[in-house]
Image (cartoon, rainbow, N blue to C red):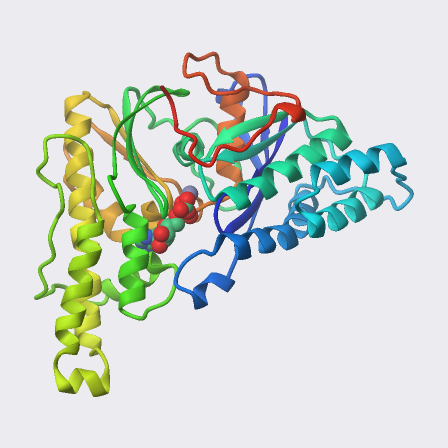
Length: 404
Ligand code: KG4
Ligand code: ZN
């Protein structure tokens, strides 16, 4: 069974093709391709602008699809494909709000044969609404034209599910299900838009047990980087600078670290960074020369340290309370080296596995959507999430929540 997956919920355009061999995942997955085009345009603005991101997705989707099919050896060129008027009208209607995409989809469908894929999985929420619509309408157009059923995927579930994929070593891309996944598990999903703790009783059975009241952890990295004038996305830049120093004289708050629930709050941390930078600017020297390298380094270290402390403390508390056997970490912030190091260190000697995706699979990509799609397609569950459906039933929900 082959699943073609599409991800456009934020600023990464992703298309992946996953092959599941046999009827059960335990018989093995083979990753045929996983192509991501990360939009550079937002770097100049320190954050993602949904309308610009939508435009970029429209430009990127067909080239990314073509590359993914090519790498999977599923791209069959045939410039004799003709589209009857009636079909063209439906395609135009599906993509009526994405006129640029319509032109490139039409061109692609006229010059390529239907690929040998069984399902089209697509992120339908949560995320930036205009961006989600591009991916969903693209999936609808392909589903309609090629007559392939679609599987709607929750983006948060995808960040969790990618951990069920075994590690991909070098060229050998096929393996069985990640053997470290024991249930119940507690998942920490930390991205630019979300910070949630989720109880995972088994694959497909999710319950949110805590989340941020304001900013997400990734957003805090991004905003701190913007305040320091470091560019976007902030997480990787802050992490790189922080890794070059060993300690910091700057002390930042750890909001809600000792609250008795599993909630988070990161907006106060961002404000604390802002005030410290303002204080620093009060010095006439700094006003003329700008922030010193030492100050920026120490601030990056302090921000990362505060975020890691809070995330790890809350997750370990939840794991203990729910008697979890595994901690699953996912989302863009899970690429953070220090977070990985500290989680591993603080769970050493305990009867608790901590699993992270490969770094390239922490941030948004199509493969995570394919894995979640695979499980959505096959598992019976009580979580009320959709299985395969006809394209007409597919809809966007920018505020979609995972589980019950
Ligand atoms: O999951 P993701 O790719 O997109 C959303 O769903 O939001 O996460 C993006 C977020 C950004 O806020 C980015 O700064 C953060 O993940 N991020 C990191 C690192 N790499 C990406 N944060 C900390 N350390 C990193 N190495
Ligand atoms: Zn994400």
